[in-house]
Image 1: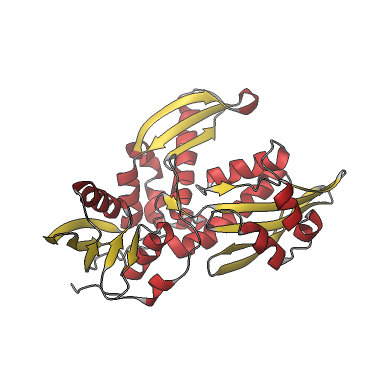
Image 2 (image 1 turned 45 degrees about the horizontal axis):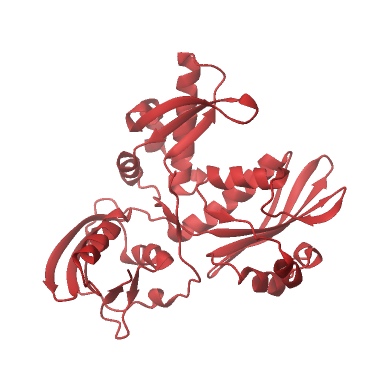
Length: 335
């Protein structure tokens, strides 16, 4: 173990705090009826959705260790119930257990993405029979499609208000043209971690999306086609999840001990001390936290990690609860 020194990766500017996905381990899947066969098939589908959501990538569905556990999916569940969705569709709602699911992904050497995730603004323009319009917070077909798609992938999101200030900063024509400076200027009004900008149009009975995701130092172009608004939104959300998880999901290093010794200041009360330990323990890359020393307003902690320290820094930089001090030899706890 070594005393943590200042790492340049911690200097990356990230514009806003992360959001906590509260229902990350809850999955609802359609089911034909309440027979045992239908329930078993639905549980298998829910298990696959859970793996994709927790890893951020559909590549986990090709992992033999994970697919070998699908027949044992019920052992990773804490509850299930039937409910009615839109248009009275029968759904099976399954809640999975966080610890066992994370350990399974770790055992399979698959990415693990925790519940603290970047919030994405959705700046979308649609070409319809009524002309080119923006998708705002009011209920509508495209809002519902993207609400469902982002929720399914465990991605925090928000739509701009599209009030007069937004309309002045970013006319629909500028959004449709994907004028990046204008979009960036409008997005700066909101406190989120990045944004998705794109235009949607009907193409021969199908739909197409052209745009890009911008997040911190990530800028990734997207071009997607699908038969329905729901499928198009799912394809777009999948690409967003893939790019963000590449940055923030941690990949466990099986069989390798990764230990770090860090010093954290700003611990002025017992509540600070407890909150710090709970925060670090909740990180998916931290196996264990041991207090090595405590002196006035600072503590020295030994961390047992599942992955490299740089990935842990990335995940902590997102919500900015621990920042490097001015000398670069310790961290400061942000209450």
